[in-house]
Length: 149
Image (tube, rainbow, N blue to C red; front, side, top):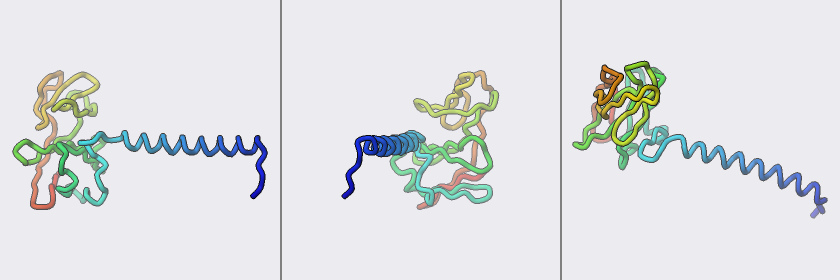
């Protein structure tokens, strides 16, 4: 075993500490990217986009009230909601007032730009938006939820 000088040891330890810190930050950022219950990052094999539709395994939604689905067609995600009666609804998370993105907050979708609010089915609750959100046809079988756009 070779003996390290104090200076070499400190340099190597500092470099390792910096790497660990960066990896920890990346891990933290990845874990903060989607809140629990809004798992936009469900198992990649559980969500499959094909032309005109997204197929989601029901197991990816189990125990969650909604998913945010990113598509190649829209800049904003599609909000897939599990309704109280066990059915599903889907709306584009893009405000109809000025086109800002929406966020899910306390059972509604809220525009951070001008304060418009929508229910989870996309209906306007509070302006300035006057038009409901774009909705999508959703069907389901025993294993899959299919959102058509």
